[in-house]
Length: 134
Image (cartoon, rainbow, N blue to C red; front, side, top):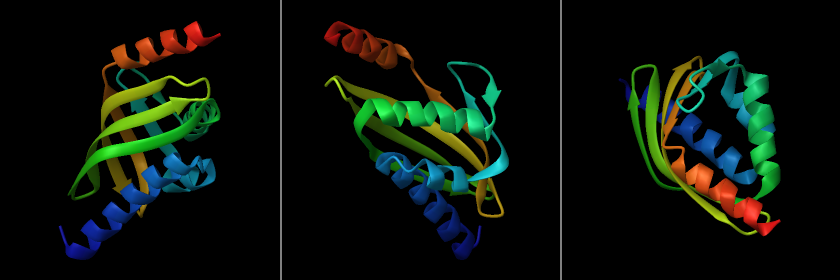
């Protein structure tokens, strides 16, 4: 892969994650192709851009902070793989720590497919902690 292509893909990966951290769904949406497919291993199905932005907006609305730590991005021709630890603080206080991997296919400077893999156990425990705060 050429250096400019690698640099462009890394810039997209950074812009995408920084937007989620900042709660900027418009920038997230702009990082996606209008026909993007976002697939989650926990659901086993792909969703379109609007459905993903709706879920992401709900997550942003329920969290006061979102940080992607220990990000490791490896580019390849046509995309990138990212491993990270997501730390998110719910507005009621519980903190989620979720290790995940993203595999993103990129065309014309936008994400055309995103596959996300994570173990749902930390998410289930976080939801239980939130419920206990009520």
